[in-house]
Image (cartoon, rainbow, N blue to C red; front, side, top):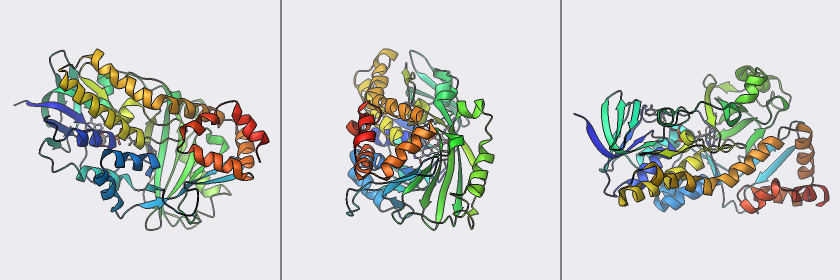
Length: 408
Ligand SMILES: Cc1cc2nc3c(=O)[nH]c(=O)nc-3n(C[C@H](O)[C@H](O)[C@H](O)COP(=O)(O)OP(=O)(O)OC[C@H]3O[C@@H](n4cnc5c(N)ncnc54)[C@H](O)[C@@H]3O)c2cc1C
């Protein structure tokens, strides 16, 4: 027998789970379909920014409070950026020593499981684990979802199924555009040395991988998440073997080899794609929406995607409720989802795209890093850009030159 739902959400990553969480108890009959089971891994840097923490609070203060109780995470109070020539800039999140604002580094195995636990006992949501969606079709009457465990019909289908989204492939059929896509590798280690006492996350911008970077993020139990992310167009053009470059950098680069002298790899390096938000895409159509990585909402400079995945889950839940209220599931009605996503994210994507372009010039990068290193004013300014959009806009405007050349 074919099972029928109002909404089928495909993918139980942050975007899909948050969307389901916000649709629970709203009178809709919901299915969440996930190809893995929990706890499940996701190749990621595991950095949860201030934005992620703020959004958990916005969604539900109890959700944010429950996350505070999760033990297997480490608070991070800032970012360290190391320029190609080795100039380092430390940007604390706090103005003073009060330590009231922090992001976290938390394995996705733990974070996604935490989100799932908040949802799993809700009677309005049927969860199908170990169930892979193999095909999706949308017509004017309904949507049909075929899976490894049978077929479902639904009024709306939500593609929250990540970078290799089947919903995107079937509904929008877009090929990967390499200049709007990065490739990433992650490897967990034990015994990496010399972390900042305030657990700063560290981004190393080495010349051969610009505008990408190598990251070292501290984790509990003396572990670290180490990885590398590089634009796919650069990898193709320069025939970069990402795994070799990664291994060579941590073994041989003077800035890293001592730090990794006693490091113990806990796994082989693993790769995954990052669909970047540097280009607008079609995010909806008749009876469907795309969320998170399926909608290419990763920041083109920093590679952060969890915050926007959650944000897209929030926006999608509002639009889905509006569609049911108006009994309208047409492409024209759902277009408001695309508009709302880009209204909230496009400016930030454009700033990050410019920063991605600028960071390609290693000499300029080194000059700026040296200036910031030696100027309290510029350091404070850069710190404020981390979560202040008005300051961020200045970064790519002509007045930045004035700040760089004339401010002490
Ligand atoms: C190497 C790397 C490092 C990163 N580091 C960071 C970081 O430090 N901080 C940050 O904020 N972001 C980071 N990101 C980005 C971040 O991981 C993503 O933006 C985020 O996971 C997107 O969430 P999502 O819910 O859209 O997709 P996902 O988290 O990918 O979830 C998609 C879900 O769909 C399921 N699925 C897929 N196909 C099917 C199918 N056919 N049927 C059923 N289920 C399916 C998957 O199993 C998965 O559970 C990184 C990404 C990479 C690749």
